[in-house]
Length: 346
Image (tube, rainbow, N blue to C red; front, side, top):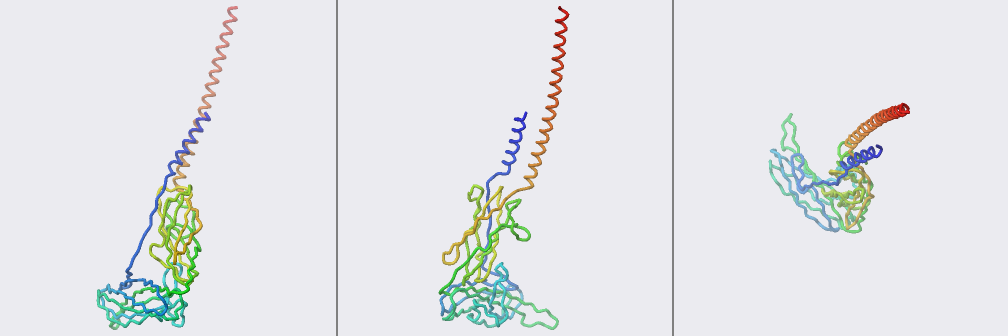
């Protein structure tokens, strides 16, 4: 009877694990070259150039008025700094502050102009790099702002604006130093926080990169996923939107990952290249896919079946004991009867 119970338990446990253990899959992507602002569109939204000191660089911008209104447009160049860790630019409006990576004094002025509804306009600017320009990265943005030519008394004036970022790399003794400050997994919904256990293979890999050099870099590479047998089961493209990490800043990149039929422990590793062939990799991080609802259901079924089998075994043993006693009583009665017959014959 013990052997039967053991076989039942092994079959149930094996079937439950078999339901969960399968192999896996992955997914991720995005890109763009025109930015739409409030009323205007501009192309390119990002000017990324490399040059030598003493050079003049012509740049052509294409501006479109996507509204049905006419505007008087002016342009102004600003320095900027990263805002937080998302790569957002924060304009430095104080004219007394000039960061070490400034280039606003190098960009030619743009005269004011009238901008008709739906009109497209090409705007030429020149970036005049000084002979004594500091090697490394220099940054700024040019903002186009438009107002209605005339606004009557009591009327609210419409406005429109858009920016084009300028990233310029000046040749010389540049220092490319990028570090992985943090690499971790987290939930795909709600607030991003460190997490190692997930019910489904639907999560985010967050990477915080710190630039300690003097030039902006654009890291590219992959996040590879390995199963418990160290077999690669998924590959995620890193930074397919072409984001830069500016000097003296930390930028956080987020990569969504969604897999199928995943169960158990997995490891993820980040491998990047940046700048002039530099490579960078992270330690492998561990995360778990544990569909606890399914596990709880199967565990409940196993426990229920175990209880049923245990109850069945108890009843079987009880009836077996009763049957054995009845058989023994019958044998005793038969033996007594036979002894009586032998005595009578004598």
